[in-house]
Length: 540
Image (cartoon, rainbow, N blue to C red; front, side):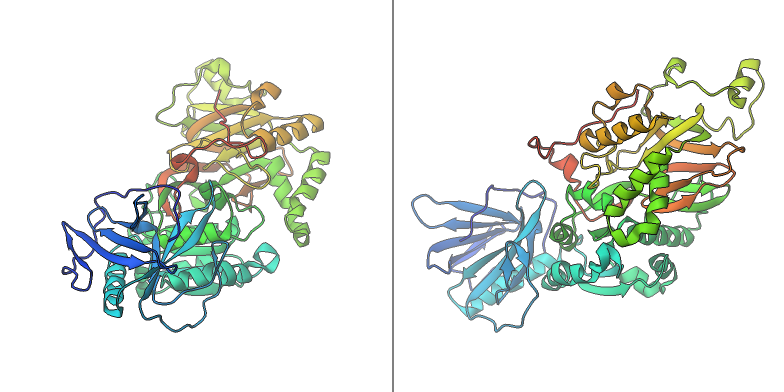
């Protein structure tokens, strides 16, 4: 029998369907335990034990050592009467095969290393076809009783994602796994910008009520379309005004998944610590769940965008704007545009106002960066004049010439920032990390971005004490009216133009459900010097 590295347990509150006591097993089950004497393909004798109360399978070798290998029910992807082809833990396209007489094939998912998940085949030989059939029915009913497993999902594929490789990525790494798990997937190829968003908003009520999840095969932009469409539809169903930035949004009932086939894949890398296609597909197939914060972007009384990743302005926004003309370069376009933008060394004069998260202490005035003079809000406060409602909306403000304004909803791990821009922001911790950095020289800015890529938030303050980070719940940015080019925002990899008026940003804690296990929180680990553990960026 295949070995497993460690014995695992499962929560007692996961229940399976009630079945009569087995009549085909060599020993009847007692106290919710079902067992059978089985053999491996090599002829070694085992006991197969299914503890229905704890929802674990145990394979016990019948020898003097009594070696025991345990799997949780939620690690069982499928059981079949025939084998499938698996190469290095990755399922290959399924082929039609004849069923065996007495062999049942168990397919478990397992963690290959700290980040990647793979598929394992465990063939079990029973004493008779009737006993084998009984165990198959038992396992199938148990899997069907797992309510968190998706049965019908909607898959959006960007045919141009990953240099046009997205369709092949789905066909090779995702579709076979969904077929094995008996997940019905409706595949839709996007034809234009916002196609996925429009389709989600306009699909009929029956289709919307029967899907168990939405999966995007592409980059962060396609995921953002799916998320925005689902949030808009959900709010319309419960009569919540999504354009009002003070509204409390209702969470969509379905979870979201990403197969990272884009250039950056920040969201999927942050959740899984890898953009490995098979790992993402495994978590979708077994129904792993974690809650993720989201941030809405408003212009006056209109919702502009929903973000579940990072929002940036200044240098990073200009890099994205410049990279659009070099899409044919693929991911290399970002390095090329970063060099071009560094030579220009842009900065933007504006006013950032913010309110701290509820669990954060007040910021002393001497810890705030100085405002450029004249500052209208500072002048009014010094003179004792009353502020307007918009000026008084937030407790703190900074009026300066900014090289960077960066807001992280999640840690934001990408191939360019493998340690994360804000590594311990968390996926669902109920706060945004807002980083403000005034105008820098070309060399200082290049050094800053190099440090951010190498160390995440670590040592950035040592390099430039003018960097200020705050854990906030809402904030806004208003450009100076004298600016001709008011810059653009990079919102989850999509360009949003900065209007003449202010843009407002608001956090919505744990708004969405994601197919994943938040690897950075559940299993923190130390890594080698070549693959360092993410470090923390803390506010001053």
